[in-house]
Image 1 (cartoon, rainbow, N blue to C red):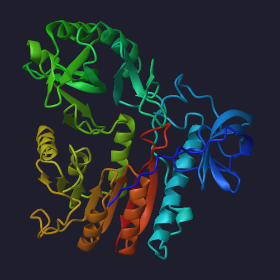
Image 2 (image 1 turned 135 degrees about the vertical axis):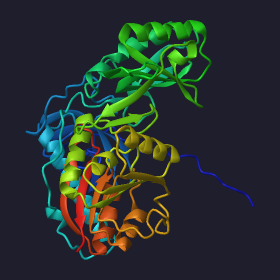
Image 3 (image 1 turned 180 degrees about the vertical axis):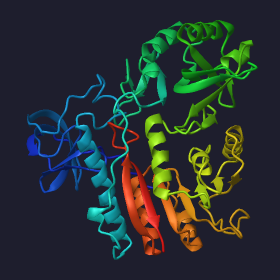
Length: 468
């Protein structure tokens, strides 16, 4: 049978100049106006602004335009503090006043809740337009991010560009500084660029990850700790020769970096390659618990919000000394250790055995003997697992990845656990999972934003559910 193929059709463009009034921001923080009876999307604008734009793409149901000038500014517009704003794809909302950013994120959550109830044809047990919002958890809107992956791209002359992806492209924006990174990391870009230019093995680096962490010398008898150190993880695509190792060592000594080489199979401290002191990474919680982690482990990137988030979780759950608490998607024990200091018993469950082992070790290091950690696929049926059978849990905390916890919340409802705290990093899956809990008789008691990623469209949320 013959196959017939059509050539790819490029989007229609008109380069037409328009003046439009912005109605709102969409879920991604992009401005929406109306043109020819369809929405036209414009990045970098705010509601109620009158703007001149150029149409760059036309579809049957929508169009896109590029901002040319603003004829009438919103009262909520502020001057972006980053010199790379508009080119770098890392931040979306720097032009919007901070309190308005929070209102935008709050409305985004409410809209997704309403849409989720409508999609599932549910009669809402709550008024999604008037959710029981509590005060948002906030930190400084700048210099809050303690971990970031920096892209590296080489041109045909092996000259490196380092930075973050530009908006809507895989190309990198050359970054000189990043004001959302904590101070030790903010100014690292020129140093890395100068170092890469001196390497003898060219085009050898895939990316560089930078982390602020507390460092303990594992070879030292008293494990001397240094706080707020800079860790640099180098994704090495080619073997590193002695000259380049010496160059990395020189920069590490001069700038107090702790360098780790990642060859794709393992991560090894640079000191171990040539002989020297090994080290451990950790961060401290507000209650003085210490979480040890590896450079490739997930940690919450906003230290201040993380501590406030844990404190609020404890307060909302009202942990009692008689409580048995289930901590699902527990990771390294970020919530588990704090829960265990107040509860009778904590059972933490995580999908990866390596994380289970690290959470167990973290509980032991912190002198906690009322934590047990187990490995299980929480996106499958787990009610027959031994850590569930015969157990009665008073409260449950779950902190899933962006995919949410559809299977887990259904089984939590089967267990009839009376108090559920859901920590979410994706409002769409939170809305879906909340609808499941509410359909099973749970009541949404409290909800708050956690501004983990200020200046961006990303939304983190905490929700408390109860069941009589």
